[in-house]
Length: 370
Ligand code: GDP
Ligand code: MG
Image 1 (cartoon, rainbow, N blue to C red):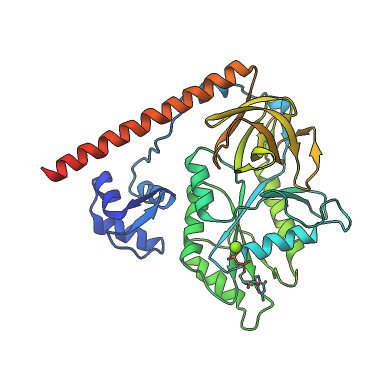
Image 2: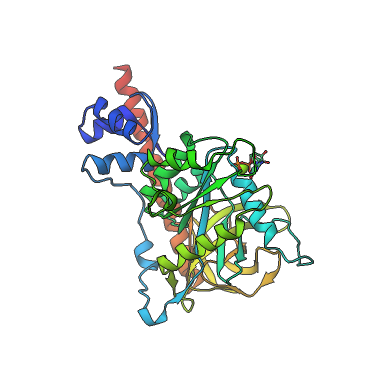
């Protein structure tokens, strides 16, 4: 993930390093000038000093392919996309597993085996929710850095037998920087010594005021182990999703984000794509990062072949000419020639960028020697 030294951050803002350290302390991070902070945290600091952060990204040909403006009347509700974050061992993986298992109808094709890095569940009240199975702040940050905004709601897991920890603070900073609403899942309430109230008061110090403390952030007590409270968590997410009024247009060329990709021995390059707008169909021609392809097959989260995937639906895509990277954006285009042209352009742009970076290093090395 992208990071920056605290001293370098101060330098670029033309502020004093101790002032930047103080600002980070107020966010709950104890660092020295020689330590690095991640890009999201840096962005919050930059905001606090009243400067504007500019993240360098290659917006090369995006303009060409992303010009379609959806008309209001074409927009339909879509499922929210949820990422679970929190400190290591607080129960992210357990919670994802528990939610998946609780929602699998016995005998369903594939059972509870995990097929792809995301899955959809239906709540008691009938709302569809899409969970990203890539917990981890690095994944969240690198996707954001690549321009993929694949999270509508962050579920912050905090273990009730522990406390707010450094990665909890990091997750809070990520959610705030991305302006994504948070729901706090106070986990492990089955354990002896669990103290959910301590979690709530701890969070106050990080300006997260949960509903039980008269704030606006929903908090739900859960146990990934016993399943207690999981329904409440799902309903809290559904409620938050309604407030967000998430809409997209299923009747347009698909736009999506790669959440993972690999080279499969039998099937060739395979990408798991989360469709964000439009509907991805078999036979569609697309460009994704520096790769392009034609959809040969689509496989859903239950391992079934499907003909199409609409907004917020995760699918495995077969038919790529190479393996893209997580966070790459997929765009359906009209012709193979167009797809190839855009992919070639990006390959060349990336090469130029690397060459420029190489030259800069050489110059630095020369200066260092002089
Ligand atoms: P992650 O690092 O955040 O993904 O945490 P894990 O899901 O791997 O959980 C870390 C440990 O806590 C594992 O040993 C889990 O079995 C345990 N754990 C997770 N959730 C609960 C819970 O609700 N109750 C109890 N008692 N243990 C839990
Ligand atoms: Mg885990």
